[in-house]
Image (cartoon, rainbow, N blue to C red; front, side, top):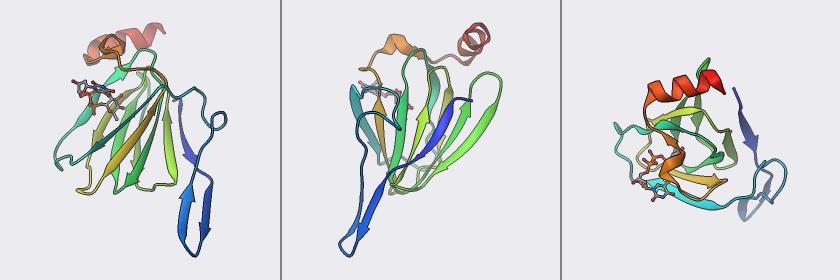
Length: 133
Ligand code: T46
C-alpha cells in the first residue's frame, strides 16, 4: 500500500523542539492546501472516503488519532501520536479516522485544492475503481 510514515527533522535544545519540512523530499508534491481538524468527539468517525487524485500528509501535532487504511486489496492500521511524524497517503486509499483523543489536533498538507468531485464517498464505487486502476 502506498503510504509512508515520515520522520521530520527535529531540532532539540534547552528551549524545546522544532520540526520542519521544506519543499521536496520527503514530500512528493507541492502543497496547495492546509487544513486542520480538532475538537472531535471520541466516537466520531471522520474520513470514510478515498480520493481520486489527492495526496496528503497527515500530522497529529497534538494528541493521537487512529487510521484504518485500505487500497482495495490490503488494509493497514496506523496510530499517529507524535508531532514529529507525518503519514503520507497516496491517492486511491480509503481512510477511516477514529479514536481522536480529546486534545487531538490533526494537520493535513494536501496536494490539491478542495474539490468534492475528487471524492469516492461510496465504498463500492471506490472498490470497483481500485480494481481498474
Ligand atoms: C482526510 C481527512 C483527514 C472544505 O470546504 N474544504 C476542505 O479543505 C475540506 C477538507 C473539507 N471541506 C468541507 C467539505 C465538507 O462539507 O468540510 C466538510 C467536511 O469535509 P470532509 O467530510 O472531507 O472531512 P473529513 O474530516 O471526513 O475528511 C478530511 C479529508 O477530506 C480527508 O481527505 O484525509 O480530512
